[in-house]
Length: 511
Image (cartoon, rainbow, N blue to C red; front, top):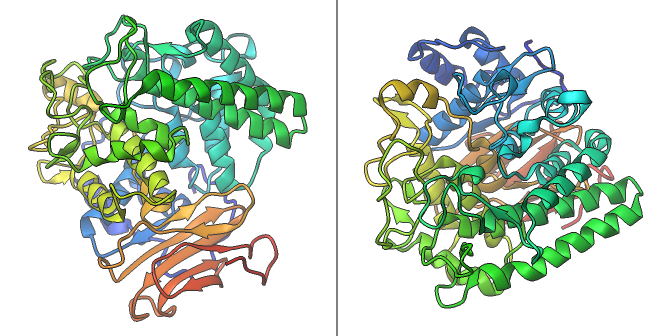
């Protein structure tokens, strides 16, 4: 096994075979010239996926193919270095990267996707690279080239692994990182500013590479990071530190909506350095839902993902509203965020939508919107008849917009998640700090009759989630069923939220 540190043995009776994705992997290998080889070559990709990744099955062949394709591309970015294994964003070297071609922009996405791997040591090494392998044993200088939600991602990861050891080890590093952001980007108002390019969202309608705007991005991230640090500090019994960061999160949250909510447009917007709100709705206005920053009164913003003048487009969700006069006016080929579809933004928007759908009832969107947009996202992973992921694509045709010599760097772009959206959203495994198993599928009841998510490492156990309307597909019984280490822990007749405390107290359940 290459780079595999098992944290949970396979259950005694897996529903899907270990090599469930092998046929897809063979197809991916056959269409790949493999000009760049990192730690895990194509020849070992099927073994790596079988050893490390949860397995998935459903009626949509395209979605299953994309699921395995994203694990296939993820391992392409695992690089062995003298400072431990790291993950890259681009498959080929780029000028703005740091050591080993590392870039900070998508660390949060790398952690969200990779937290589902059995090889937990990979992300341990990656995080230590960023915080402990810089000059003098400190943080990497290029960590702050981009906004990020690293502390929040570390906290979210331990909700999957059930292991807080690395979070506790890095607590002081995360605190130092937060204080550095306060020194670099905090305004006298207590809000944070950022250039759009340092959000990884250059050439936007509202921003500019030199415009010091108050943005929903960095401010949402900093609230989430403060909350995460407070939670980790509380577990470390550093109660004064926990109270300090709880207060930071609360103070920033109090300022957030008054600064960036446009009541007339019913949307979170950028506050320009001139003091005015931008006149453009942009996809970054959905990031507050990703981190629990928005309130129920803000839910009307989600009407725009169904509006063809808003963010809905045939090939995916746009990064700016289509009705805006500056939509898609910045050109093509220089990483424009003025409307084209970016998987980075799709990931954040669908994550926010999942949180909205699991919150208070609202009349604007439903599970069907999540389902349809996830299928549209899966369908976008194609170019010239083969599976593909690049930087960004046309909202009408789906054509990927980096072409020519630059296309080689864009190929296999590791700048978003997909598998995490399937696991936590569609299949509905909601990570929890308390170790209970919560399953809340976002699959509409009148769509598929079956799906299976199998071999999922969770809090030291291996989970299986089966939806089988008739019980005939998988032979494990009818309805929604959850297994831990091969043993049933909870069931439901239909697609609904179920919670079990079987991992905490074997044999017991919490409805």
